[in-house]
Image (cartoon, rainbow, N blue to C red; front, side, top):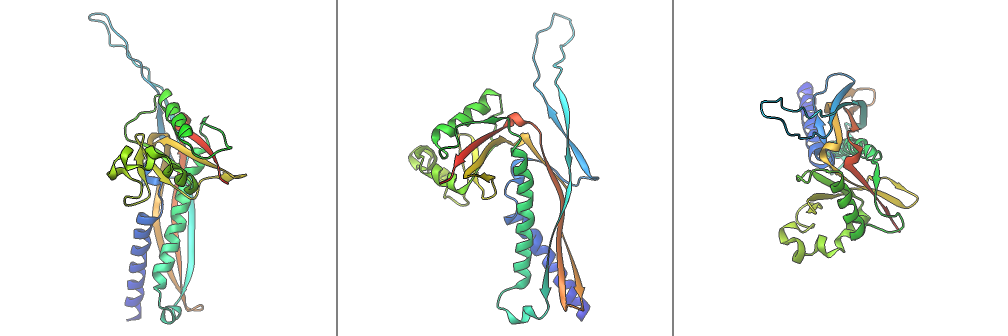
Length: 272
């Protein structure tokens, strides 16, 4: 009977962590290039340059575009998030201790996934506006123009990640939050706090760099940053009789890299 209970506990907990990580963990993972099931300590993404179309003489050879290919290595790192669950604590509390620890572990790993991706945004070569004001319409349009000038595709795969202060500032821009401009279906408070504006999905995030009162926000294309996963979130649970508790260890092996710095624009914003 004891063995069956333990196995049930383990299976239930693993399912909770996996579901919580998928639903409420990493917010930015779906917004970048992703490679799963990586074997080894690193993997390689290809950065492809621009091709040039040319004419040819009748019966002549078709000209070669000579597209540049540059490999970018993405190194994986191992991360862990563990905690204890006392067997008798579960009998003394009205909350589901399994659910609490499962969510905590999933959130911790999710934040780490986003942290890896955000760290790569710092390699952006372009920065618009000044750091003495917030996220204004002028600053947003300047970033929009910067991406267009370097031929970043306007193909529905552009994303902008901003702090919550900047999200509030965006809501004060009529073109962003007024139904007369964007339509009722595109209002930012419809469902989750994310919305599409200027052909870009805007996402608020609390983990962006904040230094000396200046929050770094970023506008980027999905192909500009990559995320590699050698091992998705896994959970290992072991019983320690001397502690009369389970030790729960959540772990993953992931990494991120910057593919094309020109595909990322930094928007520094002052936070009062």
